[in-house]
Length: 141
Ligand SMILES: [Cu+2]
Image 1 (tube, rainbow, N blue to C red):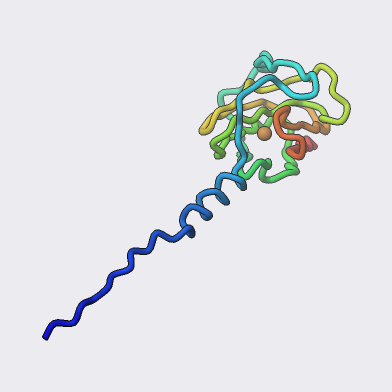
Image 2: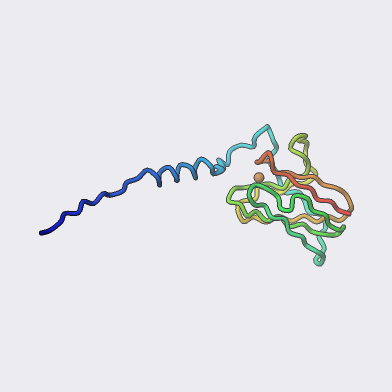
């Protein structure tokens, strides 16, 4: 005598709900116009960058500059690398008081790298024109 097995195929909704959750949580970069009437960043002319000299890295990851605050000696080049999938900028100033920046990177796509040489002591705030909460500081002393 054979026993019949009833098979129940599981077309659960779990996987669909999971996918929707990922989409909702993700940051969608529409690549649209700059918000808040911002400017279009243009690469600023670099200062004379010495061939030799220290280079310090700042990572752009998770919509943040890491480290957020960087202290360097005069004559140091800072190299920002975008490890996110969305574009960011490295733009002098503060988003809360937008004026023409002293310097700015272009839009850096994922994997993009931008460097700036800091020859003189000073304190520079910078931000990303795309993401309101993304800012950092370079202290040259
Ligand atoms: Cu950004």
